[in-house]
Amino acid sequence: MELFHEYMTEYNKQLKRGYIQEAYQGLMDYFRGLRSYLKNKYPEYLVSSNIYYGYMDMTYFSFFPKTLKHRNLKIAIVFIHDAFKFEVWLAGVNRDVQAKYWKLLKENNWNKYHITSNPRGVDYIVDHILINDPDFSDLDTLTKQIERGTLDFIRDVENFLSNYSN
Image 1 (spheres, helix red, strand yellow):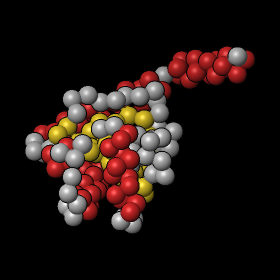
Image 2 (cartoon, rainbow, N blue to C red; image 1 turned 120 degrees about the vertical axis):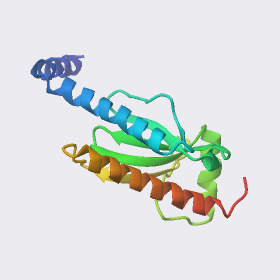
Image 3 (cartoon, one colour; image 1 turned 90 degrees about the horizontal axis):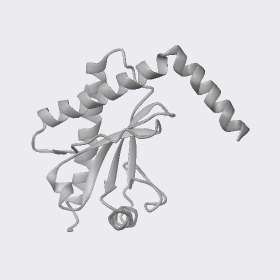
């Protein structure tokens, strides 16, 4: 328990400086804005009504076309806090769906993106880094990078799946 006490002492010091609160609030504001931007620009896509804010581990929301919904799949735009990067994930609505599509991808040697080694142990089937160490000084450019990378990822997934029936 002594280690926990040390962590809390450091946490308290950092909170008193004020930077963590400002940075976290800014990131959450940016994420809400990104979600709204995509929802308004792509009304034909499904966008989750909620953002998962996490425990300073990851923050994400889903954004995906109806073609994936019919397969019980979704796309998540994710910020990984400790690695300080944006990723895009292909995920299933549950672990059984993830296992089904993981098997399809593996059996067909799809290697365009990283496929997890354990679809039942993580929240995604496929992950792809959109931006390492993002530049938050130009949010418009950052948004365009995330948008472009996500749409490319979705297109690639849809193209692969179009060869296979549900």
